Length: 464
Image (cartoon, rainbow, N blue to C red):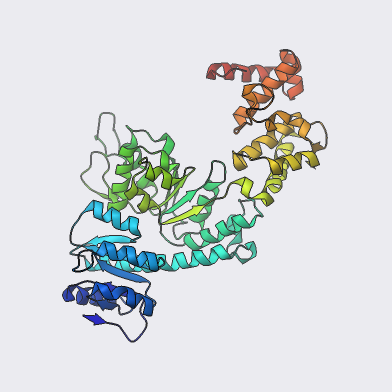
């Protein structure tokens, strides 16, 4: 059987059973979608794709002469932009994972409910449009072409690399797709999450943020799914978990790569089933949330070394937005440095108007492994010592010493404000021969403040 509508259609259905072809086609037309093309011979698929501009192929997994997974690989090799939705008679998880890894949008198990079929077809077509839009935005790197520039006001940037990121966000934000934001620590991933939520259909709903690195192995189910009264000793009232708290809105999972294998399995089940059970309850609760995730690791490498589940990765990785490190955004370095300088000078009550040329030159050459966060800490630390109207390199020389360079081993470039504070106190005490009064004066703080900070460092086990 082979039928190609006269009017161009974005959908092609491939199945060796004519009854399946007719029932799927009828369900799609009944939903108001274009009449699909249908073919029962899998050997005809590649030729049809070369002649027609199909955007979605519904592909049976088990067919004579040509296996569905094999055909899927052939389609994605020649037509990577075409979405493929696998249809299988076997609820076989390894095969399903393999299909997604080969590039399938998703998989459905026969018998397929009509509303489920239509929903998946609509979602797959929407994703095709989204990916096409993203490919266009990658070629358009102008801030002036943004549709909602006001939404990005909190992200200070002038570099074209970030303009591309902004265009990607504008394309993906109005959808309900899961988004994975990847980038080094301190690149501003959380700020971008705020923008995606604000531009989404769920902006009126809550935005719940969870640091997965701090997720407890023992308390995960309670934290994420909540419990009902009497679920365990001490559970005196019902408690909402993160999924229920984010109902109708967005759930942001920061540092998702840090989640243990056991907890990854629990998260995967909720994403697949779109529901969860609070502890002590036998009634499922719908997980009506959009997932945004972030990681400072290479997630593909985490999958390859079996540190992160493949099936969960493919569920979270509908769209990936990479955020470039600050060293690759040269136009932003001095812009941000001056912004942080003004802020911290104002807070310190100092009149420091700009960066000295020697400091500006050194900043542009610095690798800034801690990115924007590190740059702000550097400016904050420099303001403490600066006595003039220009922030000079002399005010923060130790901040630029490499870990294997001159000076003591603990004077490597700090990435956090706490590390910077420790370094500055350490240096001041050394220069003042251990005299705390003189060191406090040099730091511009009171002796009492210095003593309190020293006590805090001693209690935390750090040596000053």
